Length: 398
Ligand SMILES: *Cc1c(COP(=O)(O)O)cnc(C)c1O
Image 1: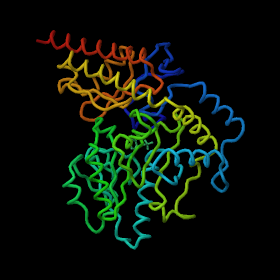
Image 2: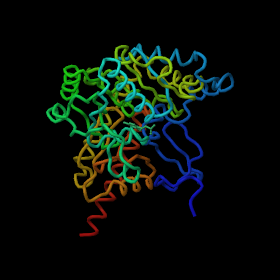
Image 3: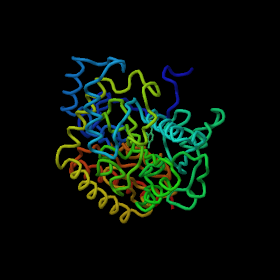
Image 4: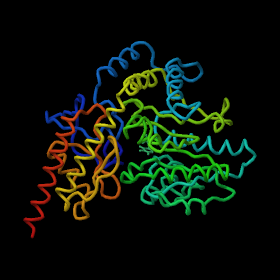
């Protein structure tokens, strides 16, 4: 019999009843160190007192009014994000995939307004992840996710990452923009090179395309800078953000330069919930902490420490962990081909550490941005314990 919750996920058989900082507590009382962070969502850990206060205060004042009216919290949030990014304007929505689809609409409308109504295609990248709505899914391009859902939405091409020539060759008179994650998350923590982003910027400028960053995974300090693109300094025309934005409260946005948003006039896009007082109130509270002097610098510094420790794990356990990837608190370890990442994730869970898997046999290591060195060391110790256990198992099998 089908479960009451539609069975679209392969869920772990554990139910949590409480979270506090870096830890989750299951209904059976067991405590877990959480390096999943709700897949890069719980930026400030679980039930951060400052967020709980913002949520409950706003919750007793005003939740939702619809976008028929001005929203003070949303205007404040947009202004702060504009001041701290490439963007001049933004549209609030409720999830990552919605942000991607909004950005695609904006790009097509920009081309239309500039006398290029035939330009609708978006160049994307192999192993990308942009979400599960029908266009976001076509932009993702993963055959497995597309199967059975009819013809993929038209106009999404996929180039290999970090190969400028292939991208340049794909551009034709129907191309509208290029969509790229500064660091691919789901794909296995695969980073673009700064030079590649520079090349994409140049291609966009040469052919009149818009450069669209998917910062859903990389934004809000996850990489040790506020935005993933801050590492290269190459600015986009459009970006999608979500995940860490509400610290666990669902909210996303697409943001753009004034020039790129030329067509987004009243009536062109909408969302009933998008940017409501409760969601934007919580997101403002998240931003209060992220933008506090030194907070993200501290994440970057702790990220360097974590990177060193993960590299050391690879050196000490080369038959288990073959490569460290990523930066800040968006890191991962590629497991040896003999160890399926699912086995590693299960082993770590049994030892009390929660991590998400990713493509290319990578376990992601995503502490909350508030994790201190003691929490990082605790996680490293469990990763090391897991490595030893896989080593012992392969010895026993010899
Ligand atoms: C998670 C994610 C998405 C999709 O976000 P949803 O909120 O699940 O729709 C899109 N792009 C990237 C890079 C992501 O990590």
